[in-house]
Image (tube, rainbow, N blue to C red; front, side):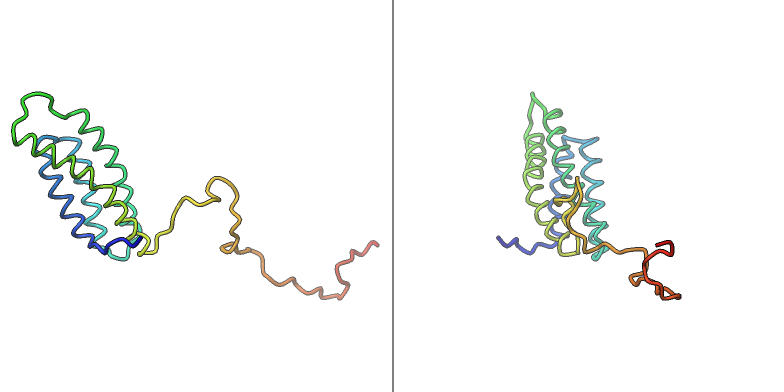
Length: 155
């Protein structure tokens, strides 16, 4: 399945707008977590070739999915819901629902920038891929100047 080509700026704009509206009700830690991650997204836009910037933004988006669930479930107002409170909570929930899709799009951008999947079969054990192995010693065996070969003298 081919993911649609979406600009990182569009993802940031949508999440910034939804986070701003969500902060009407959920301020404090919700705002800090989401605006910090959006700042990492601005860094990823500014440095288009940086794998570090896009990976930090991707990791932050994944973390804020869990943090948003906690914030919304703890601080959701139970009584006296005005239209403004319902709108703000709805925008925070919509932002939460869009984040997994945004993570997929940002992961696609991460792979385009040269990022690799960190979880491979050799992550916890020995890896079978030895293509990156390079010896420290020289590849050639030094020649024996006396021409004796590899047999020790005492035999």
